[in-house]
Image (cartoon, rainbow, N blue to C red; front, side, top):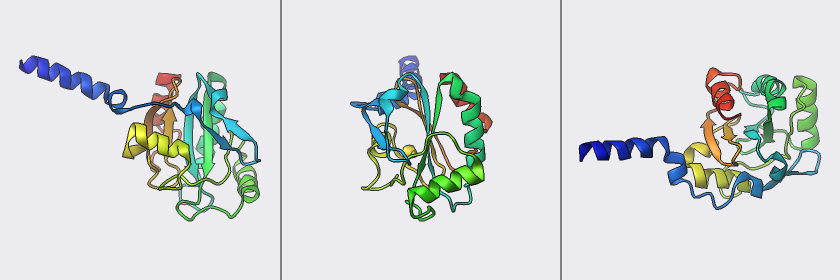
Amino acid sequence: MRKVIFLLSLVMFFFKTSVLANYEKKIYDFGIESITGETINFKDYKNKVILVVNTASYCGFTKQYDELQELWDLYKKKDLIVLGVPSNSFNQEKNNDADVKDFCEVNFNINFPLTTITEVKGKNAHEIFKWAKENHGKSAVPKWNFHKILINKEGMVEDTFSSMTKPMSKKIIKAIENIL
């Protein structure tokens, strides 16, 4: 009997995300406005790995833009999408999309997709952040700027990473390579 309980516990541990997750919707059921006003339709990213990162221009972690661009350059041909989501949820973003776009291009040569300035937490959070929380739990809710949500090729949250985890860290690289 103890072996059965142990084995069930072990199985539940390894499959905790999929067991807890409802996933009535997947990321492909959503869209978000790009920084230039077009709609980013997540259906266009089917069968790709997506790293969603809430960003801000005036944050101590803003230098992570360099590593996000490096990650994009290394893995975009292997079907990784890096999506920057500028947000003023922590009061550290510029006032308009044009200024954010210019800041990213001039200071970091960013050419991965960016969204319009978007709320990422609370009742006004964009639906993809509410969806991530609903299906993956509190770890999907950004606690600060440069929080990372990794979406697998099936359109579900694979993992999340705090602001402290740099985009080119071994932890993120391994997680991405495991699902590419």
